[in-house]
Image (cartoon, rainbow, N blue to C red; front, side, top):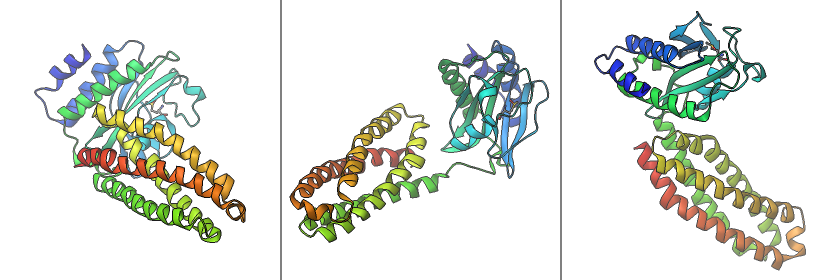
Length: 295
Ligand code: SME
């Protein structure tokens, strides 16, 4: 019902402030058990109050502090069941007890947040989050955000995201070479030990880039298939990560490989096979889908 109301509220108007004001007023009046609903937009020092429904609120939320900044900086929705238990929560109205904040996403960028407060603890469920995300997506689609509000964009820009994917691919190339060299170097334990350390360096950086940039970006995709794919890849990587850390714990110490060259070789080959298969499928499946998403 709210989606239909939002649609009719926004259909004839493109003015950003008018639409943002009516959107907040609609959510504020229509959702039960809500004492505040409104927008915050970024500037150099943090977030600044936008149109809202409810009592006057904090005009500025300093960078890095509070629930709204958390949502904005991570480009993901945040539900806080009990605001008193959220470290750094910014209390604008002492009556507020729980909160739902949804980022304003469009074209891979974050333009601000939409924040809803409730006087009831635990007011917001996952279903509320999904519903409000849909309403916010509808708002973003119907109303172009003026440059003034989108001028400080905290999330990676599309071009940065493309560079991140390219860096992931480059890591793959390096890992392939190192893995092959290490497979051949097993009979020379000193060389193998040095190569193992290099594999670890690249692998750690690679996984960090995927975890910090690639997966969070994919989780926010509007493409459900891509979201599912990313989740499958992420879960599956857990196994490979564990396999490598066991291998590292067993063989990285000085002299460990020399003491059992054949044992190391066998264990390495099994990891190498799994790693290369994984790299191949990321290159030909996951990253291809990501490229299409960022095109
Ligand atoms: N509680 C928010 C501040 C905004 S008000 O709730 C309207 C926060 O911690 O970011």
